[in-house]
Every structure is written in structure tokens, then in C-alpha cells.
Image 1 (cartoon, rainbow, N blue to C red):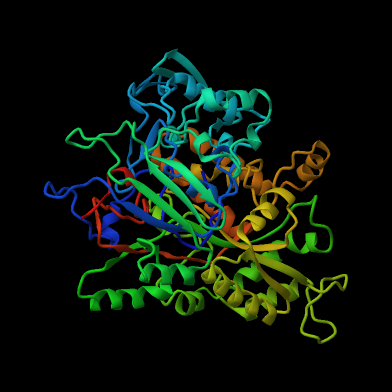
Image 2: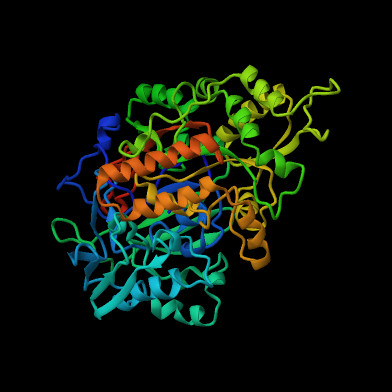
Length: 586
């Protein structure tokens, strides 16, 4: 599932469903800590991390932003998970599965040794509750519902016995196994809230941590807004190491809320945190300092192109954006001019210190298989941008440097981004400066992350945004963004109000409808070559119609203290995707 990301790149602690790609270790992130050392006592210690924002909630189902996902990343698990190194799907809460009826019936055999934090057994009832009563509940704004809907039809989840679940699909569904990494929730804790119609307000940030019940390796014990989140190891966690010993090894995890990247860097250097998602501009500095260190204080890693997209988007919501702005933002030529005014190379050179990648396609280069390298590219050219605008009727008629539309309205709007990320602010500064050169009066306004998310997903009162979304290597994970009725169909969201839906339908474009068809067909197509052709077409549409205008993609750069064993950091999995197996050296 895609979520709005806090920063242009952050250390991942959570595995997002994806499909197998080329071995990520070949990208340069090859140095790993030892996987086994029998002479080291593996148990104990505290891992010190940072996060850039307070969570908006502890309720994963309704969250649309990474601040929530990051806060609960150690708490919940799915039937499957994706290996952070190989990206292969492996068992998790389901220990095995079988397939029958030409791939339409899947039977999952659940682990019998899993317990919730409160000691209650995990069973098939929890699986059915999560999918049938929450995800498929139309009264709950569950983004995951988009992922588990196949051409408008639901998957049928049935209980065979306490530890066996049968799934009957309306049609073959290629991303099924990977999508089942969706976290399972406890029926005995949340059933009452669902029946009372209060699930969407359950597990808010005011919930006592002891009430948030999962099956993961760590339990939340403390949340102090603006300060930290604290976790302790789950003493009844089901996973064991190869020697049959209890996991996880680490006793405690603390995530400090540090909004500014500059402050995070200082805290890493002063050993207040153990891992840093490194900005490109800081990588050479940290690498040089690492090499000068005599005691091997930390190691820097370049894991190649990162997952996640970064883009500018204009609000085309007909219910909240009125004329004249609505006319500008829905004008493809207007958006093309903006695309030509984005100087990606200068962004890479000046902001990212040369460590970055121009992004043109909706799938990142890191995705490899589904990335379409042949989409339309909009080369940086202010002259071309001005030409397009002039031919479309946007002209500076009074010589004040600001172009007007055909009715004489000056092109003036606000672009927002999240204030906690200096890299994105610098990118926005370059973009808005060039937009002003082609005659657009743009006010660039960084703002608090959660307030921005509210504008993007709830109130919809915004003009333009510079933001990013989490990524993966299977396009289906982005259905919630690209489907016209998806919960993160950012530029033109489907309203919940029936009257507003009528207006929305009138403005729904043929290319959005075509993307709906592509994502339906892509989900049921089992032939990889045919799936690839479908998703390449989707990327062509995005590049042609520009509902989002891509900027640059960063590199997965990390700096990690040299006090951990079993690290297997990758661009896909991040540093602690195998947190339960990581230990602190004495």
C-alpha cells in the first residue's frame, strides 16, 4: 500500500509488498555485518532511532501517511511478508499455503504458536475479521480495500478451522501473496469498536500504548508527542533463531521525534541515534569522517536508487478548486509547461550533490522489471515552457512579468510541501524560482506534515503540492493512487458526498478510466510479459497526461553505528527490515 512520505528518503523499518527483482546487493550496498557469531552474547541493549513526525494515529487501516506506518512498523504482521534482501514472498503468520482450481482457490495454514501481546491466541477468526469486517467494510475508509478488490469484486475469506483459511478469488490475482503482507488485527480487541461504528476513531494517538495489541516483535510502551516512542521486546514472540532461541534479541527500541534533518545529523554524530537516513548532500561529509575515524564508529552505505516517488501535483478536484484555477490545473498544456520548467539536473547537482536520478516514469528505476524507460521525457527548457503557455493563451499582457489566462486572470497559486524536510524545501525553491521565470506567481509554503496530509486527503483545500509516495516493485501496490476511486487518487479524489460525486463523474477523464482498466487487468494477468505491457502503458499515460509531474529520485543512503550484528541493509528493505534478528554487540 502506498502512503504519503515524510521525506524524500527515509530509513525503512517496514517491508512494503512487492515482487522479486534483481538482487539488490548488486547496487553497491554490499557490506554487511556478520550473520552469526557464537562468541557474542546477542541478547539485550537498546536501539536508538529517529522519526520526523508524530504519528497521526496508531490505526494502520485508515492511515494514509508514513508517520503512522513508521510508528507501528514493529507491532503488526501479515499472513506473508516480503524478504527485504531478495524481495521474495515468504511465510509469516501463515506457515504454508496451497493452490487449487486454476489459481482461484488458496488455502492458508496458519501458525499455531502465535499469540497476541495480551496472550490470546491468533486464529483464523482474526484473519476473517481483518478482511471481511474491516477492510471490506464500506463504512471504514480502508485504503487496503482498493488493493483487495478485483474488477469491483471482493475476495471471499472463509474459515475452515481455527488455523485454516480459504480464499476464493473472483478472478486470478497475480499480486495476492505479496498483498497478504497486510497487517492482521485482533478481533477480540477491536470487534466492539467495529460493531459500534467507531473503528475509524479507535487507536488514536491518545490511546494508552498497552491497549494497542499486535503479534510483532516489539510492543509500544510509551508515546510522548513531539519527543519519542518507546518499545520493548515481545516476550512471547513466535519467531526463533536457527538455534531455537527466542527472538528478538534487542530488548528495547526508542524512536525520537526529530523534525529537522539537520538536527538528526547532529544527533547521529553525537551518538544520540544509531542510524541515519543520509541526505545526498551529507554523504561525502559522513564518508570522509568515517574514514578518518580510528575506532570504526559507524559505516556509510550506498544501496543505489531508492524506492519512492517525488513529484509536483495540481489539485484538479472540481468540488474544491474553483475557476479560474480549476481551468489552469486541468489544462494539460499548463502542466506540460510546468514539466519543462523543472530543472532536474540542477536539483541533482545542487541539492543532492550529484547523488540522484532523474525520474520520468511512474515506476522507479529501482523497480527494474516494471520500470518503463521509454516514457515521454520533458527536457528542461524555459523557452519551450513559455512557448507552450503562449500558444495556449497564457500571456503577459501588461508587462508586469506575470502571465494571465485568456480572461485576464493572473496565474497565481500556492505550492505546499512538508516543512520537516530541508531537501524537499530546497527542491521546491528551485522549482518555484523557475516557474516565476515563465511568468507564474507561485507562493511556496512549507508546512507541518500532518497538517499537509489533512489538506491532501480530507479537506482537499490546496493548489499545488511537492510531495512523495512510498514505492514498491509491483505496480498493483499503487492502485489506491491510480484507480479513479482510490483513496489516494490525489489530484481528483472521489468524494464521499453523493451530490459531489455527480460533479466528480462529470470531470472524470477517459485516461483515468483507462488506468482503471489497466489496474484491473494487471491484477488478474498471470503472464508476466503481459502484465509488464499493461503497466508500461499506464506509465505512458501518466507521462502524457501529467496528473503528477516527477522530479528526481534519491539514493538509499544510510549511516549505521558499528555495534550491530545481522544487518542486511538494502535499498528495498532499509536497515532494520529484519529487526527481530538484529543484535547489539557488547
